[in-house]
Amino acid sequence: MTATTSQRTPNRAANGIDELSAEVARLAAQVAGLQQAQAERAPARDGDDQPSLYSTVEQWVATYLLPTFPRPAGEVGMTRWHWCEQWWRHDEAVTRLTALWYGWEQARLQLTGMLPWLRELDHQLPILYGDDGPFRNCAASSDLGVTRHHSSPEMSGEPAPANWWSWWD
Image (cartoon, rainbow, N blue to C red; front, side, top):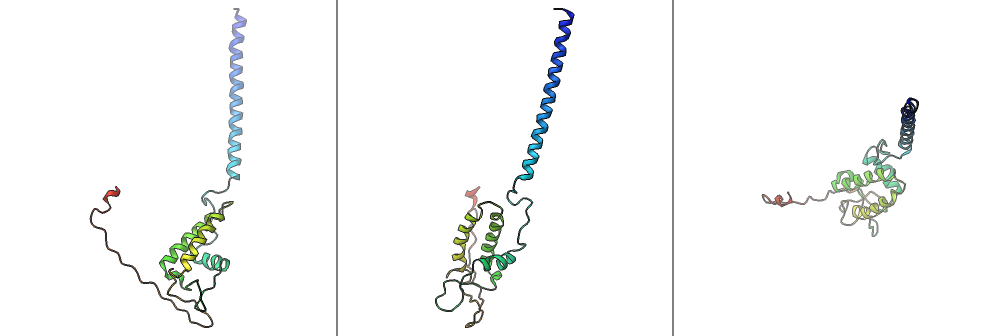
């Protein structure tokens, strides 16, 4: 091998490494650009960076739920739906309505999110408005009646014996 041939081999190798390095840098920049574009187009997940449409459960109930899903309530005839205008005094109702509101806020952000939310609503409304629901002792106001609010009596419970829950650990 001559001196000229041995000098060309390292130069070719250096040129090849430089070309590969430039190609890697170009591809890395392309990947970074694609990742940036995807992040900008991606819909928010789990409500990230999406403010709630309603600021409170009270606002959601008054502005969305009651007007959108009206039910005949009152003492006239054989009413099957019970409602209390002071619904916020019923802890069970507040808990169920808050869960529905949170679920609705998440569902509205998803393409088909309302489908499972409506199934949940269909399950919860008969419990909330039903004969055994939290409003069973209340009556909505009407032309024939007066608004009546009675909170349901609390149920009592005994504390569990010592070490009752230790099996859980």
